[in-house]
Image 1 (cartoon, helix red, strand yellow):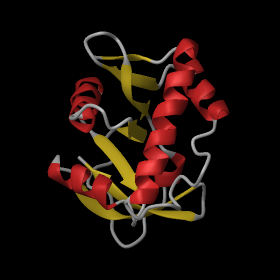
Image 2: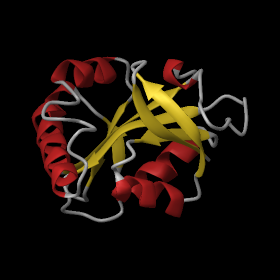
Image 3: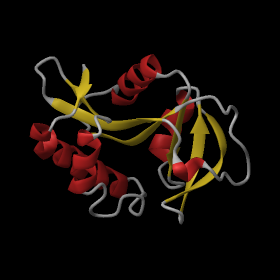
Image 4: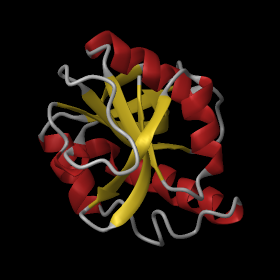
Length: 159
C-alpha cells in the first residue's frame, strides 16, 4: 500500500534511508548519497509539500519511501549527450529507497506514480547499477546526463 508520508513517519523514513545508504555502499555506490542524504530537513519539506510517499506492508509498517514531484524539474532543463523524448507535463521520481525486507517496492512506486501522471522521469548515479537495472527493466529509456544541484552528473531516464 502507498500513502502520503506524515511527520510521524520520520523515524521510520530515516531508518529506511540509513539502510539504503548502507546497501549502496556495499554494492559499490558509496558516493551518491554519502553518509547523510537525504537530510531530515529535506524529508520534512517533502512531507509539507505532500510529495513524499511511504510504501507499507499490510500491517501499515513502512518499508519503502519515494518523492513524486509533478511539474518542471529545474535540474532537468539541461541534458547532455541526448535529449528528452517528450516535452509533455511529467512527474519525477526522487529519493526512492527500501529497507530491503520486502520485494517489489520499485514496482509499487512506479504503478502508483503512473496512476498520478503517466509521463515520468528519473535519474540515478553511474555507480548505482541496481537502480539502473530496475529503471531499465521497467521500461524507462536512457536519455542523457543531467546535473543534480548543478554539479552532480546523473543518468537521466524517461518513461
